[in-house]
Length: 335
Length: 55
Image (cartoon, rainbow over all chains, first blue to last red; front, side, top):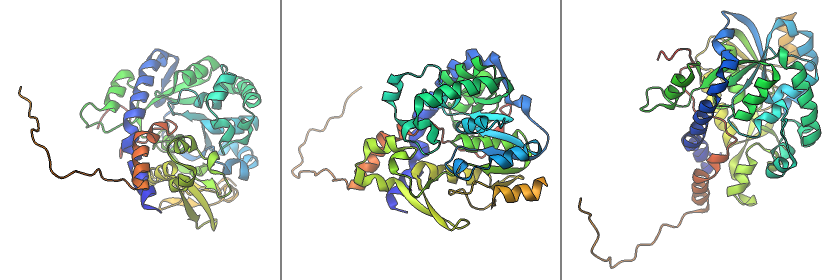
């Protein structure tokens, strides 16, 4: 790992705090008028659960496609979907018990639910969905968006959404109007003991529980499985936090940020190649995903639950994570 | 309130430290790129969940 990569991934927390934490608090203030359309996430708290499967939207989700196993054993586990995996699940008629969303971005996140106001101008302003590696179907933006609007609206009355108060107005309105059930939670933005703590301000704004999100929707889903569902075993699917080695840089998640400040011959400085010892193959990751992985390992360090990574790709391995395949997990625990 | 101002000239010219390409990129990262990380929060707390603000 280069010295440069090491330095910047350590700076992410400090550098993003002002911009993102402030935006999150602003969104939460704006969302206050919608609070009455949902309940606190406390309402779905459970004493005990055996198994929870978390479905992230990493590229392995489609490559491995464990939908047959998910359907076959569906009644034997709780299923938490990250927002980006919703299209995959619903088109296969797999209904999650809970959908998690948290990112405060104004325009992108609503697309995972089908954006009713999507215009050609929006497509011109942002090429994210055309270039991203998570779900190729979104490369055909208008067509997929139309289908997703229909699918989400159809299944919405059966869905529960763990909606972060920092979500954008567009996301909140889309979910509210869809008739899905809303369960609110606040993200930890900073230390509660800090003078003028934003987390404290956030709590007193709406009194919803503060959840340590780990910076991304996959980690937040894990935290909900662990602390809200009190699951004994937590299974990860589609949680890569990495790219397959043949993925072009332009398809990576933060390429727009990188390309704005670096020249093409500097792109490689923002990435690192890592060997997955379980799969005996290399993946590569960027400074943000690398940071998320470090945070995630920190989050799961002191917990009673067991985490099984059945993703089949990526770099989420380390102490306290058992690496196995989803068919093997099902064979051992569901038969 | 009085203002202290320098009233002398240095004989030696002070050269600005030339940044290496990595340092320049790091500086750009700090001022620009961190604002465009897709919007996810990156604060991690040791406490997992706080139901009612009991610390």
